[in-house]
Every structure is written in C-alpha cells, then in structure tokens.
Length: 223
Image (cartoon, rainbow, N blue to C red; front, side, top):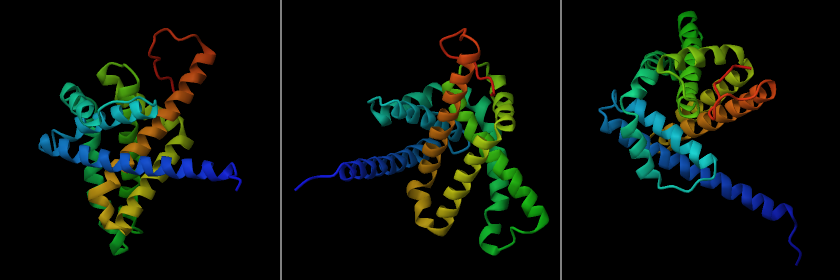
C-alpha cells in the first residue's frame, strides 16, 4: 500500500494545529493565574508581556519550561510593563464593557454604540501591537505607545487583519461561551502575537534593505 505525500502533509498540519490549540489553552491558564496573582489590575500588564515573550520563543522553535519562563518574565517586567500597557489595557477594557453587551441585545447598530465599537476595535488593535512591540524592540518606555500608534495608522492592511482576528475570536467566544474560561484569551494572545511578530519581521527586512542596521535589535520604522 502506497502512502501519498498529501497524507503525511495533512497529518502534520493537523498535529501542528492541535499543538497550537493546546498552547492557547496553556497560555489562557497562565494569563488568568498570573493576572489574578497581581490582583487583576496590577497583574494583567505583566501577564500580557509574559504571554508575548513565551509565544515569541515558541515561534522561534525554542524549548523552554513555559511556567517557569512565564513566571520569571512576569516578575522581571512587573513594573515596567505597567508604564507601557496598563493605560491601553484600561481604555480597551472600558470600551469593551460598553460594546460586548450590545451584541446579543441587537443594539450594536445604534450610532453611539457603533462609534464606541469602532473605538474599541482601534483600542484592541493598538493594545495587541504593544506587547509584541515591547518584547521585540528595545525602546525608551515613553516611545512604545507613539510607535505602536504610528505603525497602526501607516500599516492599515496588517492593522485590519488584527481587527478581523479580534472580531473572529470575540464572535466565537460569544457563540460558544464555554471557550472564554478555557481558550479565548490564550487564543487571542497567541494569534495576535504571531501576527504582530510576522509584521515586525517583514518591516525589519524592509528596513534592512533600505539601510544597514545600526544595532543588533533594529529600531521599528513603520514601512
């Protein structure tokens, strides 16, 4: 009996997909546990940075202890991460609190709700950019938010892809509420980090083609 090339290929893709589902579930647990460990308000920012860090290492094919690495990054970035992420996380959470309840009630089409929804999507995209930007580039803390904002506005197609991913994860979570405590946050963190790091890598290559890098970690210049 001859095995076709397509068979093993599909098997590998299914295995990879299942592997990433398990990673999303593990990331979901880690993010929730360490966010709660910081009393939610103080735990969310370092947990988000730690999630981006470990996902970045996983995308690079590195082997590492997920729990120990997550905990180490959470501790080491506990204070710095708040300066970068907490304002964006707070604004995003407040906007989502206003928008998400409008989806099942059918009031999303009201003008004020639509404006709030657009603002929420922009806030989600900006927040999604910040954590991968923080772990990928070495910048003064005050520069992360302006850099992420400029990148979002100058790279509309990647930003739109992030927005579509956010809407897809949110819609799936609302349709199947059981996903929320087990996979939703982890799935969004894994997807958004993978997308952003891919965008930044493409940007780095473009910048490298235009001028030789001055440092080992290139400075992000929106393409």
